[in-house]
Length: 383
Image 1: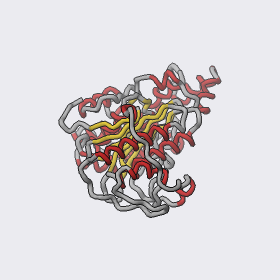
Image 2 (image 1 turned 45 degrees about the vertical axis):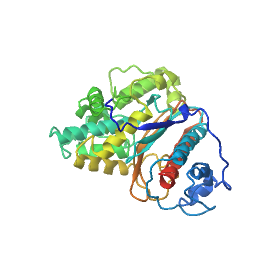
Image 3 (image 1 turned 90 degrees about the vertical axis):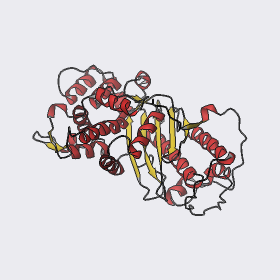
Image 4 (image 1 turned 60 degrees about the vertical axis):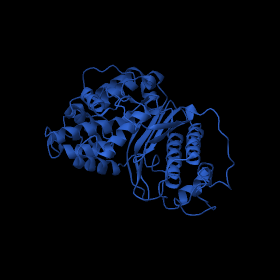
């Protein structure tokens, strides 16, 4: 990766050896009350905020406007340490592995948890596919209004093309395919776009050209699903191969529906990312270093319209908070990554990955929502 004098400073709970615990102020706002009134600051977070000693919160007081940024000092550094501690505490709600990386887009300090660990990207890899498509559009190799015929043979199960257009004769523009891929996580649209991008290797090459390491794309969604279910692909459509595999080995169907972890798949380096690498990609997109200004605007606008994962990054944020994000879900895996806009218009990037959990999607989504809210409160009130 390209090195510079502005390389992010990492504050990771993994590197914290000793620190003094501080007493939480006041009571604790329950999750139910938190969800009912998104404009109240959770007293559960006050141990983070009190370390800054720049804000005095009363129980039930509204969120304050974001303060002007100040030079880091011992107290703000201490607040970052406590944010990292909070990430670690929240991660214990799941019995899986949790990775987190967060950073203000206008800053150079990030707070992390297991940020160098690789996690299966699931559908979060679709951001890199979209970026590669937009880079080809910038070069004049593709156009947003270019029409692509949907081959019924490559349709992959998901909410979108597979469910809504079961008959042959469908053509969609690249723009509509991008919309389906990023807002509905449509797998058929993704595999069409992956091919238009030049294949998985071309997507990885685009990432390396940006200086993003620690993230790689090795397959389209159909082949990622085959690998997750231990299916060796053969002749026939995706649906035919899945049904044949389930008929031959019913345990594969049970694995698909139960969300039971597949440890070899979870530990596979293929189609994986570290939280830190995804954060690097998000920051490069937001800064305009990944694609042109017009393409950056178009890409982020689509990501802001994402319909999946309403209970993840966005789950506990104030109503109306703008979040440009992409989720990923596959068996024991639950991810959400994106850019969150604060009330003053500034943003922070966040990547949260979970793998190997057996407690279920509700627990996974709550952990992601809690981590997102902790980061939001920190950046809002500490900076």
